[in-house]
Image (cartoon, rainbow, N blue to C red):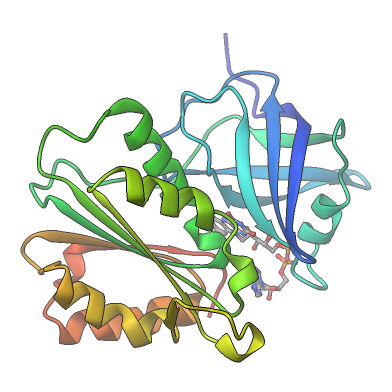
Length: 249
Ligand SMILES: Cc1cc2nc3c(=O)[nH]c(=O)nc-3n(C[C@H](O)[C@H](O)[C@H](O)COP(=O)(O)OP(=O)(O)OC[C@H]3O[C@@H](n4cnc5c(N)ncnc54)[C@H](O)[C@@H]3O)c2cc1C
């Protein structure tokens, strides 16, 4: 039987992170198959059509519900409406997950260096949950992953505690949150600066070399552009850099 283009999903829960960031869980009426790192389109009806936008899935594929880390874009057509959908409310989901932003484990490069701005951490959360759930107590083959997560404010690290927990539990993961406006949170003890300000330090210290590492960049297009320059200067060929750009520069 042909798969319908759209299925319904019911919002089963939400966790507000800040006034404009939230994590939402959605139960699709039909289970979707996807690779950790891929995205699906979510839509809401507006007059006679659906307004849809792509969103990276943060849950792992074996979860019956889909989880997303979302930001309200002021003046945007969909995200302010999505923000209003209460638990029990319905959204529409494209039944086909898409995208090539998945872990490169066939390349022979054992190291994976991820860089995200705010909600751009979602695909990496799906990957970490998948690896942690499947490959206990640790991946059998050589495998290291570092997530450099940048935000303006410390409150924006929606998955900070969970990723720090996985990093503590398994030697395969390092989690580095960095804040570009630390003066807003005087107690902040972590890294300071934008992702592109601190990336080189962690690439070098962790021996994430061009021959051993795939780099993944996700979120803000300006961070991605700047990181491409950092990586070029560090000798990374374009072929081992993967990008998921959330909106046009
Ligand atoms: C593959 C992919 C995965 C994505 N995953 C996520 C995700 O996990 N979580 C998430 O919150 N968003 C994600 N996005 C962005 C999302 O698809 C929408 O662009 C966003 O929700 C805004 O939609 P909107 O209809 O409210 O705004 P629109 O009406 O589409 O856009 C209004 C304006 O805001 C710009 N814009 C869009 N997003 C942002 C932003 N975050 N900050 C500043 N300006 C922006 C647009 O370019 C446009 O100029 C993803 C995008 C892509 C391409």
